[in-house]
Length: 413
Image 1 (cartoon, helix red, strand yellow):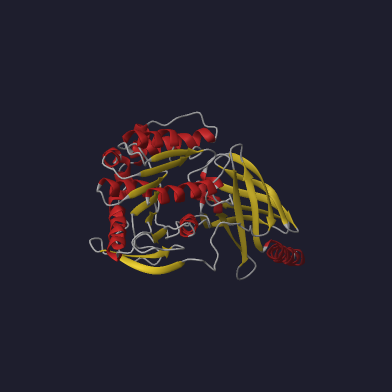
Image 2 (cartoon, one colour):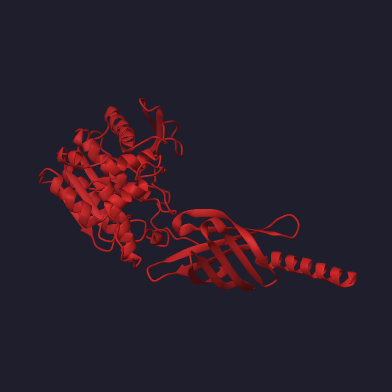
């Protein structure tokens, strides 16, 4: 009996050792649905003794390092789970392949993973040497106690007192000066293109993020972030180096641009996918559009959305739900170029760009444009869902870069 028990223990130990050797590394696969596909990454690391540590990434959703529980592990099979998310991964493995299923909330997807790390291509990311000059700068929002670090880019053929300059304002959530997301750096791409076409830019890390220091974030609203942008405009004016001074804002940054426009702070505005209706209406339509693309037939009302989201101790969201851009739009008299993608499922073009066009005062230099097949990041896309952002190599459509630079140079003459 002792011999059999000892033999069993030896076999278990051997299986655990074999599992460690066979599974160690990074495994990547795709979950495919009717509407989109998601990348999943499994990291396996040996720990002390003969156990393994497993973590799961969903890079297309910007989620990394979720610990997984080992439910079963043998020399050729595994079963892992994340109970709080009702996720279960089961499969058989051999050589460099795991074949099995991924279960979540009663949905079952076939999953095949191979041992490799996915390489992401970002061909538009600027690479040195650059034909233009960049300078690290810091400006202050003294009222908020924020010291904002940024990059001031002087273009090719810079002409003091004549060259236009653009302050670049990111969308919601803390982001760096490049508005970096999923290894895309859209503001760096825009700044590079503008610099090669005679336009200066100032882009900066959001308050208390990156190299920027100070400023309350937990209780900050769109108005607070607008004060940071206003400090940037004031900084540019006090340098006495530029001609016309404008602001380019993406998403929430586009609405911050209109806040500054209504205060007569800027000479021109580029609004990339800003909301043109009340915040709760825009966010409700966002949810409905994403559900529609995913094949869901139900629709949520504004009242239902508010019931789910109001009063959740999130000051930014509470403010934005009640924010109505109408007044800011009606008081923005400077030239505006407002643009949106027709595949944008976060800020719906037909709802928001239409409202922006209706509410802006008439200005012969202003333009609005809906770009076909572009998403919220202004990438060419299939569905427009956020799951595609990371999987798309393009950072921003070339035609958008061309149109923005041409428009700025035309009004700066």
